[in-house]
Image (cartoon, rainbow, N blue to C red):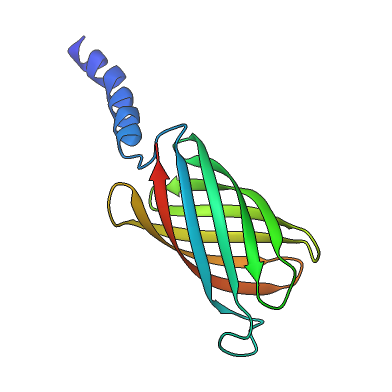
Length: 145
């Protein structure tokens, strides 16, 4: 009987441990700003930059929905809508639609390093499917509960 109880409670313990490992709670927000460090379509340093502002709402601790704005140096600015999925806590996958003139779809992956409970440093790689361009971005995020 004791073995049966242990076998039944073990999955609950693992599920509880997985929830405790989450860095963000359901219903929290992550506000971030980032700068593209490198892009495959850049003709030179500071001749093609892109700065992004983004807000993520965590519907679940590992899935967020985002909206943002991309500032471009030599192209039209764009509004972004998308989401993130955290399959392993510090790593995430993201999809964003860039809406506006020269619309695009960005598929990306990233990694988060917590500088404190609320402040995060993020590194991301994005592939823009329509324009066939890749970019490397660094961002600072602030978690709001």
